Image (cartoon, rainbow over all chains, first blue to last red; front, side, top):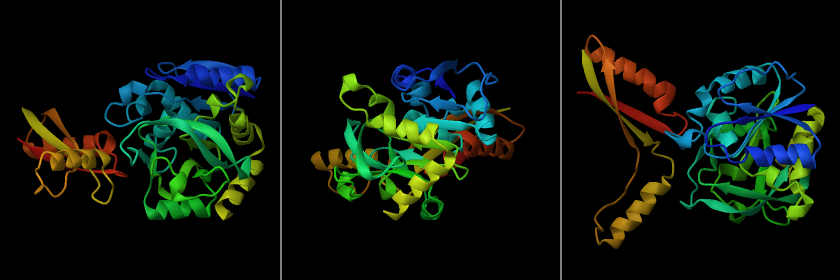
Length: 236
Length: 81
């Protein structure tokens, strides 16, 4: 399996993602410039990653302009063919703006940019909390109640904010996201978006490798594995 | 001819607007306690080439629907000058 990491003007977690996948998870990684559009070196077993940062300066809305880049047109085609796509932080915002995932990421409820470790649980760790860093100003996931109900009914909520013990409670929600949602997937189960940064927690040298569990179970395990774990979160 | 079209984009009424809330706090601190609520959006000016105001409005509405506003979180109003 190969990974492609898209580099937008303003991406700033692209090299972290490359380093995590290449050096900590021993995967082949190809960096993809936003002005290119060739994805012929990838098959639908591979994965394209949209990294964190501030694509196109977050002008208009986070992710709104990135959606129109040449590479994104190819990524949208790739996703529609069943290829795996992961968006982290700004990448999640881009996926929502590109309509590959439902909903939107709003300004944090506390009006602040938040950069700290938080806890989430979900795919790969349905019961135990994973410690993962967040760093965002617009991470408050929002969709209307019908969409949220549908996401939950289809086990599309892949991560929720929780406390250290794994309890999904309002006080463990850093940004005011509806229903403590930290990450979702599409109905087909091949497009994933999440605000927390698993790529910042894959190296022993950094003292936290919980992110490996996320990248491994979301992207490198069979689809059924991911779906089963997501079901466990929904029922928790 | 060229029309000057104003597009106002506002966060949906049912959504919390943290920016507006912060400014509201500032106004309270200034002693402007009669201000009841603050919501902050965007005002976008378009210069549109069209045959008549209706056509200019239609073009601006299409731009708003497709890019300038995200209907999941915002609504917009268009006025042609």
